[in-house]
Length: 518
Length: 109
Ligand SMILES: Cc1cc2nc3c(=O)[nH]c(=O)nc-3n(C[C@H](O)[C@H](O)[C@H](O)COP(=O)(O)OP(=O)(O)OC[C@H]3O[C@@H](n4cnc5c(N)ncnc54)[C@H](O)[C@@H]3O)c2cc1C
Image 1 (cartoon, chains in turn brown, yellow):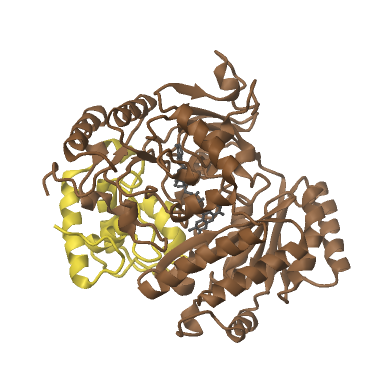
Image 2 (cartoon, rainbow over the protein chains, first blue to last red; image 1 turned 120 degrees about the vertical axis):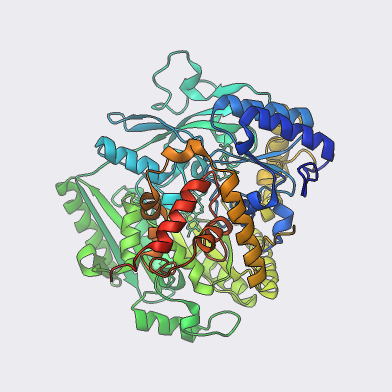
């Protein structure tokens, strides 16, 4: 293939114009940072979704290493009307990974822009570039001897705070709601200008990473789950290492126990007794650490209740397992532990498991690691449950009320089973809300199963919407569909902002359903 | 040439991918990135080991898997394996990592 013969072109861009743009990119970034050959683009093709990857194939990948280069990329994209999809560490598994929203968009991969610009160990703040991973940040903190923790999502080591926070991801320490603990951004706008949000606008300010709100409208939010700018720096808060960290689990035996356990944990969360993102893991989510579906059955379709019960019995896994942790001084943790124990006793059910009881249980170990900000990839065991590399997160929000969780679990299980798939889900409690995170797992090598997964996902969205539930985030194949759930006025406001900030529609058209062409 | 990007790869497709990949290794090494990873042991410990040493992914040490085969898996990320771009692990480091894994002893039980 000669370079002029590009296999894929950006939508509406002629081959010659694209070639000219590629030449300009090469001049700006150097040849090694402009990838157009199909074999170079392979790592960006792993979408895991229930659609053909050809629909999400990029025409090129660019890697930039500084802000000026990002500005240059935006300038060239504007000149040729080339849409550009930005990723930071590019491992948005289950949401479309690094692939663009539609075929032909170029990818701007910022992984090489990976400086930890500043950490203030007294104020417990950090300022980082997009390519920094949680592993890199944690290693740096350790090297410097700072007593600070990071809060990674489950794919910790191979993902980063900028990408995760911009997609409004979640972790498991007391700093679990990542956007809540973000402070200050630097953003390259579509017109090439560099915006520093909040206190970052004040010359010589030293409060950019300590005060979120700045002056006037608070802007950081419009650069998350959106396509209004390219974030090139982000501030975040780090958690001071507590004297004592005490992780624990509570196993509940029956499906319906979810109702009571949510009622019990909610006040403990709102009152700050259990300050972290508490998890309530369903049987198969928990089992996927150690069990494969093929250990029990090779039949296609949904796993039977009998098999699920056998897994519970043979592996001593609860219908629900709650994971929480206490943090603080020795005295604080002792007092809070007594409150937790008393609450569970009062409930009259639930088997408490401490770190000592858990021994070498890999599920407990990785949950404890996440709750203290250690790196682990054990949760990738989910992909072994059914095998075949298909995964889409269906992640509706729920009130932190037991009755709501029962309703959502029943609804999701019914729809998943109807399409021959399993409920592999967990809830993450952050005071008043629950992220209900269900991994729609399917074999992507089986076209029939993939098509069922697609219909299933669409039905989940539709039926949940009918019940007044919306998802907090979704993969690129369903972004437009989900934008509809949030109503025409939100869509119109987003479009108005897009028109004002990016009139050529070059920044990630399609992200969260925002696109001037539709 | 046509290169299948799907994970439904038969043996012949794999061979083609691997050949292309080897060719790529020699032409585009990102020298700038060399100082990012201290060495291949570090990459193994900070990425691969989290799955392949704990029973999540298959054991890959001590199996004399060829470097070409290992590198192709890293870039494609077939099935449960995530794909890693050259921005994440540059070609030179990946080549050294693949050789390291290929020549390594089986993990201690
Ligand atoms: C087993 C497993 C468990 C998971 N658990 C969790 C979990 O606990 N919590 C969680 O949140 N997620 C989880 N995920 C999903 C996902 O892998 C993580 O959220 C991951 O952090 C996202 O990828 P990333 O950090 O590489 O971000 P990226 O892929 O780099 O970015 C994510 C998105 O943000 C936008 N974006 C990125 N960078 C920029 C930029 N510089 N400017 C503008 N927009 C940008 C883009 O739209 C991009 O697609 C899990 C995945 C797996 C496989």
